[in-house]
Image (tube, rainbow, N blue to C red):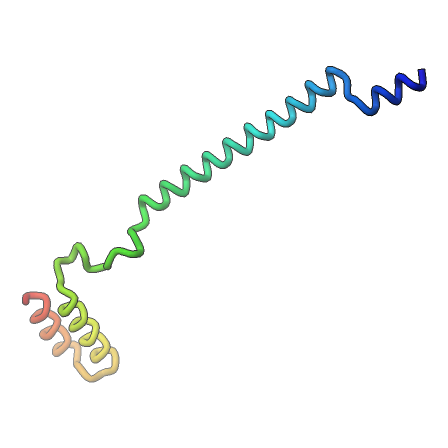
Length: 97
């Protein structure tokens, strides 16, 4: 009898194998579902966030030169070189082309 008990402890019986298989399958299913959910959430987030590589002014119809001029104009306004009125006039001139 002692020999049989040792043999059974070393090798699981049918119920032990079935239980171990069920745990492995359940874990795999849970992980697979979580990975799929994570990928779906990530894909949805990427669709709502604008492409970081695309220029911000691509849809505005402004040229690179106009963008550059507006940036310089904004810096001059922030530094106090241009008044609010001068800034507005120059900005309108650039935007109207």
